[in-house]
Length: 121
Image 1: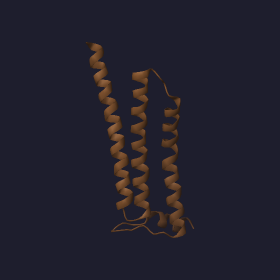
Image 2: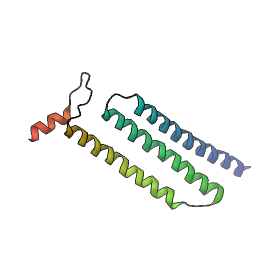
Image 3: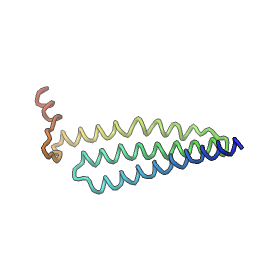
Image 4: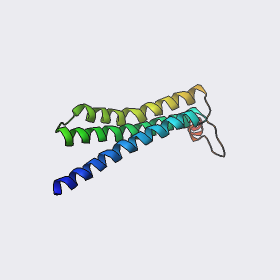
């Protein structure tokens, strides 16, 4: 009896991880299509896809571990790689866009990065 409850709980955790990952990827896709400038699109692309892929990879890892007794190092390495590289690449792309001259759409906000560049120059 206990084993069936544990299996049910683990299956629910796997389903939640996969569904939340899918919803994050979907919301990131909608954000890329709907946001007005490159900076907010990069934010949607990296935050949502990083969290979405993390949820999907964690769900897949748990499924393989629980159902087939497989510890997939490839899933863990890809999760670590995505968590490390996606935010850094988005930051570098946004800095390059700002240095080229792409201005953010500012509505009652300051461009603090431009002010910091002027102070350091």
